[in-house]
Amino acid sequence: MKSVADAASGTTDVRRTIPSVERVMAALGDPGLPRVVAVAEIRRTIDAMRRAARAVDFDAVVACVRKALATLRRQRLQPVINGTGIVLHTNFGRAPLSAAALRALREVGENYSNLEFNLESGQRGGRAAFLEQALAQVVEAETATVVNNGAAALVLVVRHLTVRRREVVLSRGEMVQIGGGFRIPEILEASGAVVREVGTTNQTSLDDYARAIRPETALILRVHRSNFFMEGFVASPPTSALAGLARGRGIPLVEDLGSGAVWATETIAGVEHEPTIGETLRQGVDLVICSGDKLLGGPQAGIIAGKSALVAALKRDPLFRALRCDKLVFAALEATIEAHLSGAAAEQVPVLAMLGVTTGELRERAEAIVNALAARGIAAGVTPCVGEVGGGSLPRSQVPSVAVELLERVERVEDLAKRLRHGTPPVIGRIERGRVQFDLRTVFPRQDEALIAAVGAAVMPNGQHREETTRLRVQS
Ligand SMILES: *Cc1c(COP(=O)(O)O)cnc(C)c1O
Image (cartoon, rainbow, N blue to C red; front, top):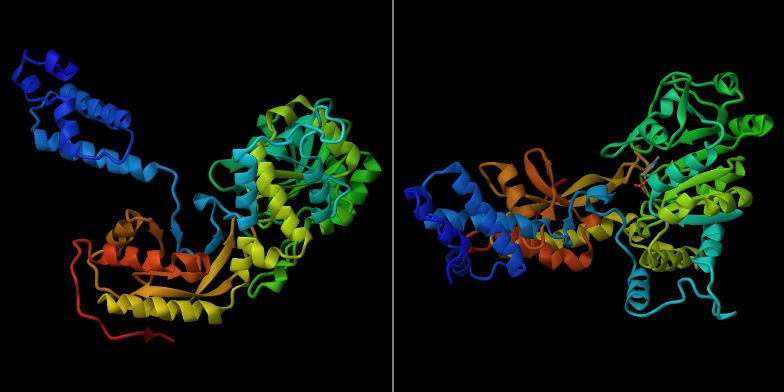
């Protein structure tokens, strides 16, 4: 059978050079992707060449398609080894899930569940009844509920509270951008609110807030400066004072806490105290918003905690239905919350467990990895380094850690980093003083073997073998 490309050819020399899809497909071998994806890529490549109207040789087409398919394969969602030392890395999916969360995902995912079914009455039931109760306990709130993510929680709260009065009072010091394209003032405006800016970047007083409140004011919003901190001539009123003002004027105070700590972060070396959700609510805040996949260590979710009447009203808002979570999120979140409630989170929730590992333990692993690399003829060393909590939380934190540093001479360190990214599994390290490093705090011990193999493949891409180098060079 003639392919489309063949049928269309024959008018010009250029067209005659264009190969058939079938021939390219045969030359490619196993594309490592569904056949139709490969065929579509071949058609796209051939079309582009046809439009460019230049003669193309068969090998060039095959090479071009092969490259495009490799890029597509890399774009597939897949595990990576995080050697950056940033525990909650938004680009890498933030919190890895606990074994209990994975079990729950599997059990709920592969079976039918009581998602909306009341086992007492045999009738339709509310979603997440136990989850909400357990969540309220773990965040020390009257009531709590969950939507898709922190941003959705903020949109829901702001839209719901600004139906009649439109204005949201916000300090100029909290008009922040969190990660890519998430700007607090823009989210507020997109939610239909009018932002009433108060104070200055570094100084906002209680009086600034008090003077801004008028009949159009719907709420006061506080936003955690998640990913940066200000030092020097900086002041804003204590939360309790702001809560007193809001209460006196009969408007709610909402705080977007971002990371939502439910445990004492200061127990981790190098990390400061992060106000917990419970502490914040006890200061008199009406509603707190935070993410489920930051310091809580669960799946992507947006947690809303606080006054029962407000949370109940939010749940009746039609928008709540549009922002509700999937059953898989409930399953993973419920398991994560139970770990916190049973006091087992420090061992069982990966984010907490990783932050709790001592530098001594990391150093031992680093030495073993360096020795294994030396056995493959690859020069590496052990070096102290500094990691971060990340995820837009605890920007001041400097988590002392230990890294494996590659001491191989390379022409361009960026090329080595790229080969590591293109490996299986992809490894993302960081470049310090012109060398690639892997902070072991964010590498799971079960990944050490894969890390060694991936480094071997990236340093010696053609499968060369070398004599063993001197073992373990420990740097101070
Ligand atoms: C992370 C963060 C958000 C966004 O939460 P998502 O769960 O990523 O949608 C909102 N506000 C603050 C202050 C944050 O730190």
